[in-house]
Length: 87
Image (cartoon, rainbow, N blue to C red):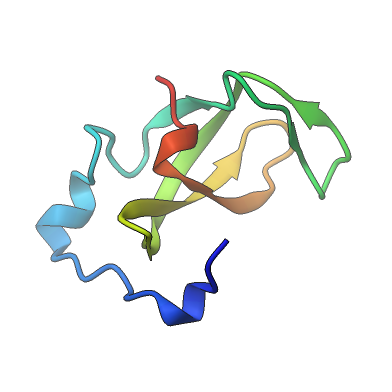
């Protein structure tokens, strides 16, 4: 994976932050990791089809949007890439 410091940060206006790429908005709860198993470093659970709430936009990596999320398993704050969102 490419170093995040070498990629341009997301430059979005306030209006764009309310409705971000992919049809999801900040504050939406989405389903992640349909095909992969993710590990929550906070609670130690292995997660598949877990839900998370989008709290912001982290940046752009290789043409994909990175989001700040709060995982609903334990409230852990982390980031995900748009390809992990499945609904």
